[in-house]
Image 1 (cartoon, rainbow, N blue to C red):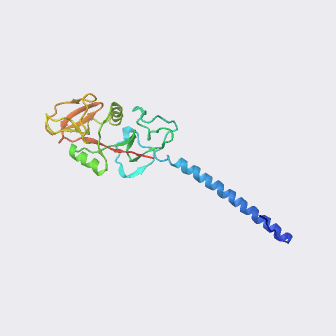
Image 2: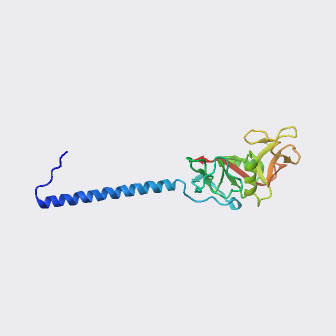
Image 3: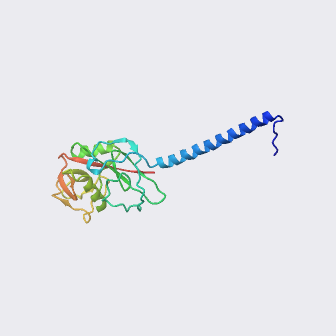
Length: 223
């Protein structure tokens, strides 16, 4: 392809200036574009840190979600220790991203946790969790139990999603699963209308009409 240059010296000089300006603008736009892409990647895991477990009882808004900051060090999926609950996010395996929890909730593994400030009976606590599009706490293993112990260490008793209808029934979680007695034991008699509360690592039987704080949990969104 051939280019036709202007005949006059003045026109040719103007032509060179316009070409130079156009090239400079293109370079500037390219730099701005690359910088925007870099900032966008960094912003994917930026945001406010979740409060530490000792102050985690602040009321969270389940309709507002925030992206926590992911630490630089990566941990294997499901290998994060419960002794690190103060971290605002759990780094996942290589190539994956961050956990997204509602503002004021604490992330742990693939779940988000919220502890109430007020006290209610077990049924009302369950209803409150449902309004937050979550459920009352279901503890699956000792690692999660340790995390909950760290979160609630300043609270005497807290409702969890465990109940029994009669002394002849099995303790059942709100998700319908039966309590694994080899994993957890309930202290106290399983009488009619009994519900589970937790203190440190111990699950206790209490009347469902008693009033305590409660814990809600909901699945985290993996980004």
